[in-house]
Length: 116
Image 1 (cartoon, rainbow, N blue to C red):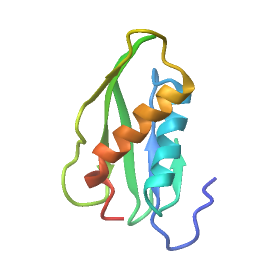
Image 2 (image 1 turned 180 degrees about the vertical axis):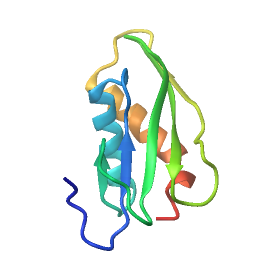
Image 3 (image 1 turned 60 degrees about the vertical axis):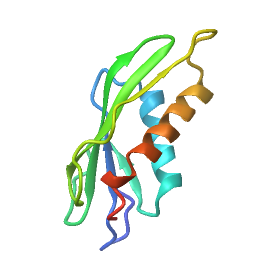
Image 4 (image 1 turned 30 degrees about the horizontal axis):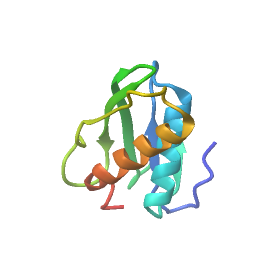
């Protein structure tokens, strides 16, 4: 169930398998910090004025992530954000590194949701 106030546009983040739930949660948190619209995850029905973003991951290993956000509904401008590549050599991807990737991805993809 959505917690969005009536009449307020929201962002819906869709993270289809095999996206790591920890990565999806990190991207949702970064979206919440980057803009004022409510952010919901998963299967929340989109209403008029809502924007649905999909997290598309092309590489996910213990040391690297490559992915982008794409806009499925709502907004003007590009439908796909830039591909972001993130890798570390000396350690595995920790929760703080996932958060860093998520913040960088959201910053790079701002044109997808800046009309909200």
